[in-house]
Image (cartoon, rainbow, N blue to C red; front, side, top):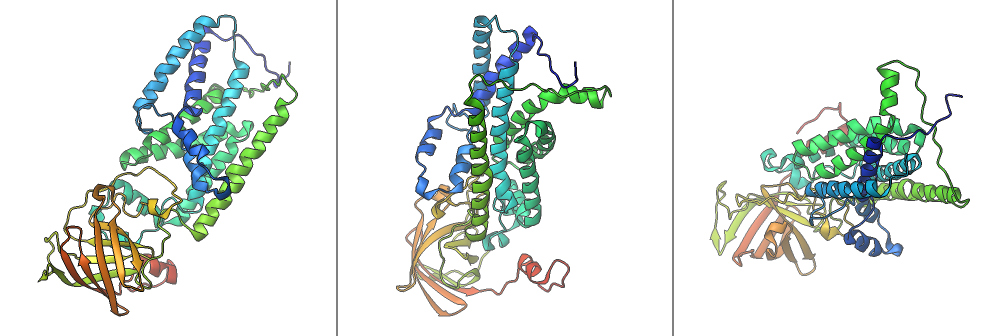
Length: 447
């Protein structure tokens, strides 16, 4: 008998029981069983596809508690799998091995894991996931950021490294698509995604549950060849790969398999990759794309601040008096004052198509209140709305004038319906990131 041939032997009762558990467990983890998934699926407009819609679908995990990141969901899946294993063991005493079923379960897990890696790989390869800091971020004190936001901003200032991480993730995903390179893929994914998991724990990120979910899928795939790897590397014995081939009872099954592979490659590699590249070039999804006040981007010193016709001098402790104001390139204004900020820590990764839903700029950020605004430049009207979910309904109704290119005068009503009169003077401030772009990393810098 040649080494390439494989004999399928009878499995032990323990092996059969473990497989039954694993089969039920991973199918529950992978197959969509929640109504929310199908609501998202059927809400997709095929005439207006956005790569974020695919991202949200692929992020699916079973939800039994109303919170998909709740670890109790994993406990529920384990309990269901245990009950299913018991029923299956009692009712199925004739089958002595599940080699074919094991093969197809690995196929399902491989493609589920590959899809998850691909949708994250492209938003790192084209550095979208952690963009460069906004003007407001650059003018926020280090201690006013959450640990997660600091981690993300640190990654955002080195887009080349972020692209490198995306390339590694993309390589691992492609290797998963081929049975013979699956084990090599798992040896890349375990340390890569494992590091993501521990980073989320250390920096209080919102992806700890999902990254562990991916590590779990990877561990299952690695287990298939783990014994052979140990025999080859540790015991230094001749070791041959498992050459089990899938059975196709009907003639249409193999062509259908190739068709499904082609559809998967087209959607997750070709189409999604092109859409991510287009987003990077034209509309990075983390920041709003709505136009801001013309030629206003920058940081402004608050020269004069009047509330109810009373002039308030500069004070680091006064919660009412503004310290500085930032106009972003898009329609966001951030105001720094001593007024406390209840930080929005909703840091689960989403790709929002609508500009009004994009919240990266203020997530995990304290020290400043962030406002989106609608502006009528002809009439000189501007209305600010606090974007933080902890300050819903907070609005400022203001008029503005621009006596010169560096001055903006605001007057109107604040969130408490007190009258405001504010004179802002633009500060000619230089930023290291921008200067590095102009001169190169080794060029001389003067700040």
